Length: 510
Image (cartoon, rainbow, N blue to C red; front, side, top):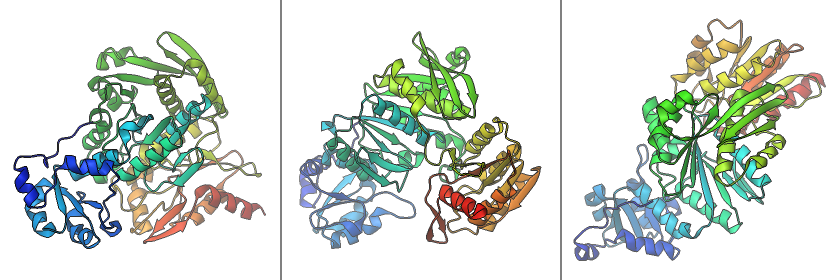
């Protein structure tokens, strides 16, 4: 992936006189080990500071701080040359580029010698299913004898190493550093969940993807992107802005946005459930990996798959049609990375994902599941799944995050109203907002729900939901899944839904 930087321009001799360095020269310094920072507080003598673009926080405003800490090089946007030059003066060498965020990726690529790494990189994007799909692919590849690294929502990990994830997709320099360390550990394939924010902010700049996977697109993050089309175009960057000759684009043909990507992107392969004749009318002559759900119950899924004239059947303990889609995506990736249909047998041993329809084990005969569903579509899918398993009543406990898209709050309520016999309305991660105000936004969507229970304290609400359960009921604790903490008024409070729910069960029955 090549980018043009406006630091390469005429008048080089004049620039040198005024303390300006060419970007290509800075790249050579990065190759030799120059450390690059985006936080001026961490800059040390002789290092490089990149003034990253931003709205609330602008890197340009922190150039004086970086200089005070000993920065030798300052990377700034060409458009701000007149503003930056007087500040830098003779204190450091300035490097002017079109986009500092992209420049950071190229510097990281040079520093960590990306081109020397013999490791395959798979990016997974979409609103729902990224984490589960990455776990399934990891299991599939590891069972085939490959060493796998994962950068995901839950954690960043590879054999012998694991740290909790701070972001779904970490910052650009950290991504390159993690992949560098994976390569040192002889990792064969890196699986990366790629968020729309990360794509919009160029956090994956400097990377060459061997494959991109699109799971689906439903309403989420509109507080950031504004509308669905802008949200989709951010996701599409993974497939359009990071081209390599051998890259494969793998898209869900059941999703309308997935079909757009299949039609628009070269080297595309579709995956999904059901007939493909009408799909071909939209996307043209693309390879398709076609699935059919042979059976599905509370014990798992039997899934028939067909690709290039071959058919096979897999058995999985996962439940729900949405998990059938995740299994299809994982198989599509496996096949593109050289696995064959016999390798798919290992899916029968995949145990599941933390916080994704995770059963809360107990000795009291109660069916309680924790799930990360925090979008209307995800909440619809998981409730539909539990409803199809013939429980007597579905009790759904949920809320919405604070300081996020307010428009989806009543829609979340509507999703619960369509399925739940009992809705338990509570807080999620209120952050700086009043939980009761968030609940007020949700409440109109719950019109028509047979029974609604409310409490702004999540632990109290879970206890109330457990007390409401009768034999044959199922309780869904939705919205937070694997997240280990709640954020309330600037405080981070330990709160893992599975642990809190298990603890309350023990207290109730002790």
